[in-house]
Image 1 (cartoon, rainbow, N blue to C red):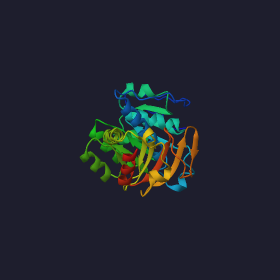
Image 2: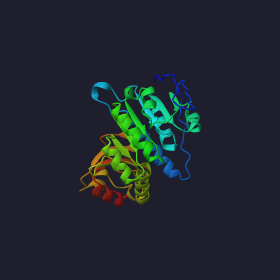
Image 3: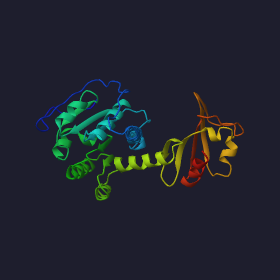
Image 4: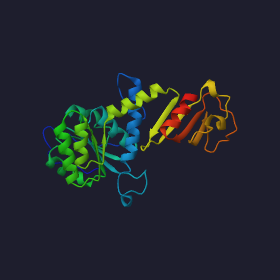
Length: 278
């Protein structure tokens, strides 16, 4: 469990440690459902990737229990904190707003009302001993920068910081943040691509122009074989999912069925050609 000193970190300060409980029914309340779904997916992936930021000698597996700090408990930060807790990790959440702390106090390992821009705050919670930190502050440039500097100075290896602008992004990178994230921008890109290509069920951008895409098969191509559909396209077929069955090495001569899911990897241009066929 996370060890937090009982000394005062500011006024008011609230500590709450309870057993982690299931959060499978948790959903983000946002006005636009697609944005909520996209944010949930992105944060889930972020949580898993944060879990793997440490040196190999400190992590035995992706399932190893680790300790994380989340600074800023708005919608984004609270979602990250809850998802990390759901993945079985110890999570310390910090926010200067007591109401936000109270809202999440019973759902993560520990929640603290304090000013995370102060070096004394991070020293008192022994921040340097944590595996990684997420700075999810969205409306206070100074606090975001100071928290990044303090965590870096304390030796936290994995620092994921939310940026509010290009300038903020550049400063956080130069301060040594492991990864700078822009949830609104990344969600906007994702939604626009999903709207432009409705046959795409999901996708993963691995950077360097390589994507893994989960396509839905429509009525228009259900009579084609896999070989016909992928002919002359430099793509890697990773999986075919039909109902509850998964085929990792499907027969390329078999015809596709409406509703099949095709998971393919490759560069953007050939993937776009395949999307046009669907």
